[in-house]
Image 1 (tube, one colour):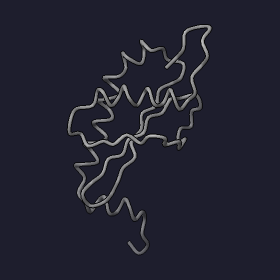
Image 2 (tube, one colour):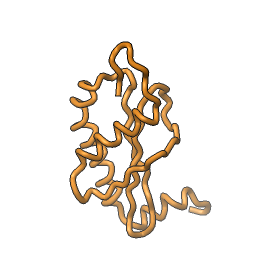
Image 3 (cartoon, helix red, strand yellow):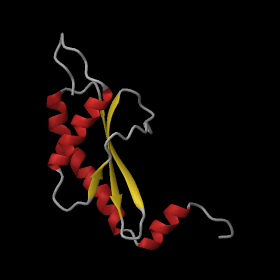
Length: 116
């Protein structure tokens, strides 16, 4: 999280870990999301964001990668205020994935196929 003036900034990994911990604490039991610790993929077009990654898995074997990004410029208070909304969006994404039929998951895994 952002540091008070005069203190040493934390590494992105530490910020990401703290963000992920805050989100995990706010997730409801049984949502089925697994935190991806140490995941360092940078899919954002925006540099300077803290990122927390989560995996959602279906019984058919398909996994979805879900993420939350927060600008590193945000204060602890701003992040705390936004947490309910961030968690709600993450839950919505997870429920959307879980509600897809396994046939759709299979198509997602295989990607576009020729001849259709």
